[in-house]
Every structure is written in C-alpha cells, then in structure tokens.
Length: 55
Image (cartoon, rainbow, N blue to C red):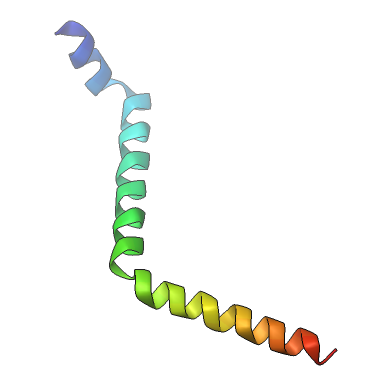
C-alpha cells in the first residue's frame, strides 16, 4: 500500500499520467473522426499523384 501511495505522490508519475491521458484523447479523436481523416488523406494523396504526373 505504501508503494502505491508513493507512486501516486511522485512528480514523475504525474507526467506519466498526463501522457497517458493525452494519448487516450488523441486515440479517441482518431476513432471519432476516422472516416473524415481517411477521406482527407486520400484526397491529399490523389492530388499529390495527379500533380506529380504533370511534372
């Protein structure tokens, strides 16, 4: 029990928790906007391919 308290009170543990929360939020956003992100990336790549053919 002492180890868990020490881990929760450590400053380094706070940074780890913050990083995990940021990753969870980013993964959630990717899941929510997956179709929009996929169409955006496909549009960008199709423009790159079409413009590279004209060079």
